[in-house]
Length: 211
Figure (cartoon, rainbow, N blue to C red):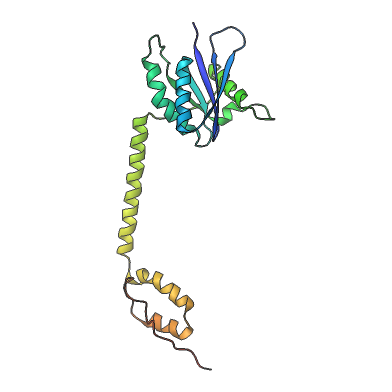
């Protein structure tokens, strides 16, 4: 009975995908195929993995490029594979391998060779796998972070509105002082602090120092 595993080498615009039966004796025989990284291509990837009766998928955590691939397979491949007849306990499992655990020899990088190495090292349990929360946990994490950021913004605005008047009026006065003559600057500093919405302080003053 066959047990097929897919390995995906993830890049920004292309995906190198290999599939092999890992329950055969001797050297693995890989089927290779290239896909793009746009949503249409990711849908085709999920359909091809279902056609190949892939039980597990392993990919490398390359920058942030793995996330759309993971989410597409999580939506279009994983639930269908888990509900098919004759599935095994680990059918529909996605694995995310840390990049440094799949390093090969130095030299020219080959995409399909990297994908094949992912499958071989997953079977040999030589990969360091990362934990990826399920979609519900990821959604709660996003909501919590957003709420925390909004709370920080609210507190910062409250602190700004309750700060001393001199601090609030310093921002609009500073560019005026930068371009004013010495006599005008002195008059500005001596004038009472006004609201930010008021007119510029003493716009008609044109005093200049005489020799």
